[in-house]
Image 1 (cartoon, rainbow, N blue to C red):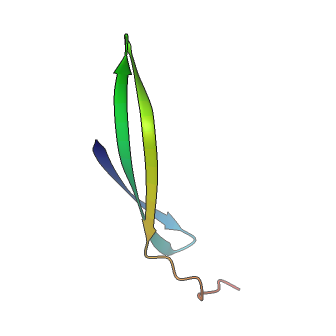
Image 2 (cartoon, rainbow, N blue to C red):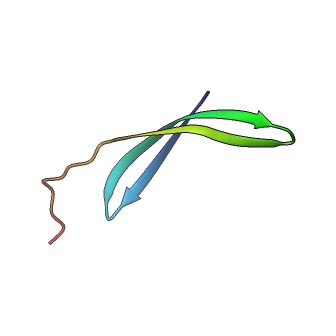
Length: 49
């Protein structure tokens, strides 16, 4: 399992996106078996209008 963290600035709002990945090997390929996204730091009440 791998954990990936991504920080994005979207219209001045910092968004932290994380993913839990489970990767399996089949032959000479690596495939993503599960992908579980996690998002934090989202303020749904903030408006950019």
